[in-house]
Every structure is written in structure tokens, then in C-alpha cells.
Image 1 (cartoon, rainbow, N blue to C red):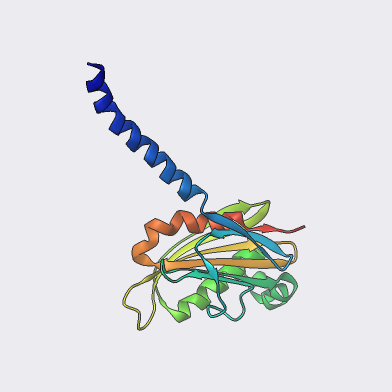
Image 2: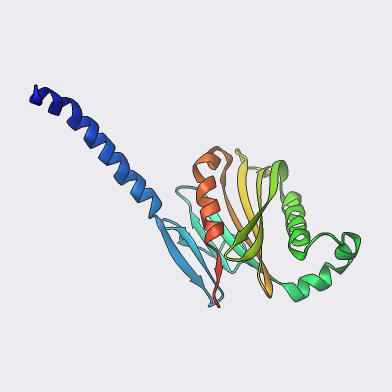
Length: 189
């Protein structure tokens, strides 16, 4: 009788332990990147630095085999406030962050046909105000739509855009990864 129970329960126990090990690997697959003494951000270990995604970005990483990409943009709040003065007068209830986010989304909309937009989702990331948007868009000459996760973060002197993207067919696989990346953003004091 004991042999029968062992034969029955041993494979189940092995499967259970194997699934726990796999889950642990998924949770530890990030590394922290420090950018020019300005901020820290946690990225998937397989992502590599690049320079070809956006010339204005302070950080650019990609994994071309998984087709995931990330850039971080920075804008001076002083310069933004002077550029956004008219919009602020017209819409006094909107913050610099909200207006900046709307302008960035409008700019992105000129480069693609936006098929779906979700947001803003208001967040606090390491005591900083932030807004998260998700966009699915069609880019000319691409066979598949792209999924973007954009998080706009307001620091004391700058506004940051953390933009991650992949193929829309991979959205479900990477949504939580992209959110983890954005929520890991932290200014260096």
C-alpha cells in the first residue's frame, strides 16, 4: 500500500516543486540600471543597451529576439512650463504632467494609427506623481500592430516618459513586465 501511495504522490510532488522553481526564475529576471546619476530603473536581464530607438532618449534597451523595447525620455519642467503656458491657461485644472502626457500621446498618434487607448491610470511611483497609458497602434509597413505602455512621471525638475513596446500579439505576456519596469523608476537623490 505504501508503494502505491509513493508512486501516486511522488510525480505530483515533483511537478509542484518544478512549477515553484519556474515561478522563482520569472520573478528574479530583472537587473537595476543606473542612468547618469539621475535615476534607477529595473529591466529584464535579457534586454541589451542600444542607440537606434530614439536619439533623444536618456536610456534605450531592447531584446530583438523577444521583440521588446524600452526608452526613457526626459524633459525639463522649466522649459515645459514655458511651452505649455497657453495650454495651462486654457485648462487650469490640468497639471504639467497631464498636459505633457497629452502632447506626447498626440505626437505618437501622428506616427501611427491609434486603434485603442486606455488611460490615464493615476499612479504614485516612489512618491512621484505618474500616469500610465496603454496604446495599440498600427504602424505603416508593419504586418502586426504594436502595443505600447507609456508612463509619464513628474520629478522635481524634470518630467520623464518610460515607454515600453512589443507586438500586440505579445501584449498579455509583457504587460506586467512593462508595468514592473515603470514602477521601478526611482530618482537618485
